[in-house]
Image (cartoon, rainbow, N blue to C red; front, side, top):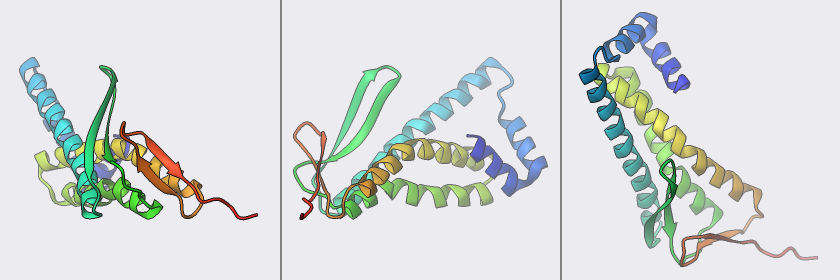
Amino acid sequence: MLAVSALIFAVHGAADALELFITFVPHNPAAFALYTGWILSLVILLVVIHESLHILAAALLGYDVALQVHINTRLDWMVSVVTFGDFQTRLETAVIALAPLALFTPFGIVALAVGGEGLVIAAGVLLAVNAAGAVLDVRTVLLMLSLPSGTLVRHDDTGREQYYAPEKNS
């Protein structure tokens, strides 16, 4: 969130950024409840859109796609997109994993630059939520890059990822 605040400051200048944050700071309990509800609703919407972009990328690559939600505790949960049965190449895995980051980030930055007060706050939340979600997406790509060229990924019936690396010739 600090990076998003710095970006708002850089794009809009100190005076406008400070006025923007003062405008949106809740001044009473009712305003705080409304503001919190608005932010939480936006976060939920952005998680749904983020995962939908993974689904869209996988579907455009021709995969049969499912959405899985893993809930360990109330605060420990994860949503993931699973392509059942088919093998994905490293490039296809990267395209699916990075689709939300590649599409949301430019949109969010433009919205920060040209948006009014409400849009700037929404864009800030979009960038923060998308960046948080992208951490695991980038981890997936880095894992794939660490595996040998020709490695394939497959999701089994439970949604668990399986990696198939080619054997090295001696």
